Image (cartoon, rainbow, N blue to C red; front, side, top):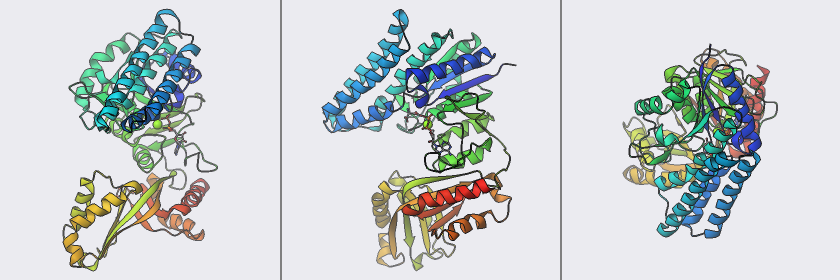
Length: 469
Ligand code: ADP
Ligand code: ASP
Ligand code: MG
């Protein structure tokens, strides 16, 4: 029986006319198998960077950079339109909106140049333009294969709050909008091609879900239309035991649980945006990660439960350029509220904490933040605790950087005795010093902090352990 599917294509999967043809061929054949298909697309690879680069250049008055970036973006899209062989009406249907978006880019950059600053809202208006262009090319590539496809701007479907740059989807509104904008197309056996990464507030102001957020869009749309599955098409065969760009001998994982995928993504595996899991999990929608350029490979299935292969460990990942912040002092012992005040002070700087670890003696709290935020965070903590520092209840607030969080993930960590021992043993025999540790209450991951120069070696060692099983 036919299923209702969301197929999401990432930046490299729509990065050129050839890639778009490949993506379009996948959609055509999935639809020909009798499935209802909604497509979500990213911007062409590199375009979002060029757009945001233009915005930042405009603020600094670097007009030449804006002109160069705009020309590069125009050339990429026009070359793709040429190679797709678009003629007549379809050429206009594609190039007219792209030209309009490029004019919008110029106007926005002029405005940013005059203002001399870019608000999160303005950055979203600029950053959203990439998907608002690529969507027309992909829809045309589908039409040229005989699939009735329509470009759909997610501003009409994905309703969000106004947290610009990290907008939160309002799912009830989005379901209602999707019922109007998408379901009739699916019922008519037509394919909506929806812009990933973006949404809009109730007032129609464009927002973005955060960098890499098109995966999240795929899951949001999937949840809104009650899809049977969401397929994320990227440029690798699926989720691997480690980042293939960093580690030798990686293997593609057949399946992962939502929790395992969520930990891997949160702790740095770029293959899926970490927020993608929640809408899928809430509605029990399986996610498949597949390769646009190797479509017959089964890819990785992410579902509620998964087997516990790999000796209890599934993958290893790293978050680089981190700073380990420590608040230490004997006067903290048994004093209630220190942690709450510390994290309150950090939160007020708008910094998110990637890992926390507290020694049981309560004489120190340490946590990790991005290295670039360390100075601001330390200042905020020194202000918050200036009395305690004067009284020497807190002796020191300091940071150690750059450090790296290395995380091993596997659902069986909690069930298999000795896993943590094997992890530390593997690093110990290699003479790698572990600076801090955290094991989430989910017990599906163990995170270790190591000095930057030890990071690649740690990841490789732990990967060897996973593959050895
Ligand atoms: P897309 O543009 O399709 O969203 P991304 O570049 O965001 O693609 O994500 C895919 C990339 O993620 C891969 O090319 C790979 O280099 C990287 N990656 C990092 N960790 C992993 C992992 N554990 N498994 C697979 N890919 C990974
Ligand atoms: N185009 C957006 C970005 O580069 C979203 C995505 O590709 O997932 O961040
Ligand atoms: Mg991505």
